[in-house]
Length: 124
Image (cartoon, rainbow, N blue to C red):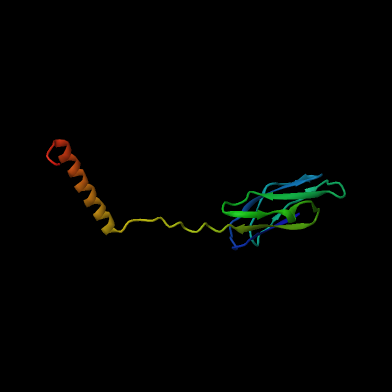
């Protein structure tokens, strides 16, 4: 069974692909697959009509489509697709201008002085 890899953004990184079959012995699993470098699994002693299913460890930031790799006939091939998930749009955080910050600081200073003077009995 040959498992091809396809990323929507042509990411060259390999992924780990695991294979399970209805019968037979898989020589080695998991294997790595990357775009242009498929994982090629060898299955021996399988019953006629056996099929295999390939799954991957989905890379972070991607959505997977592994449906083509379900119940693949022996000597067959399939492709696991990964679609890059768009990053959320940055959120604008409202901030004060420097002038606004200075005016607020001046107001708080005047208010604080007035409170202190009132408590000391020196202001009406």
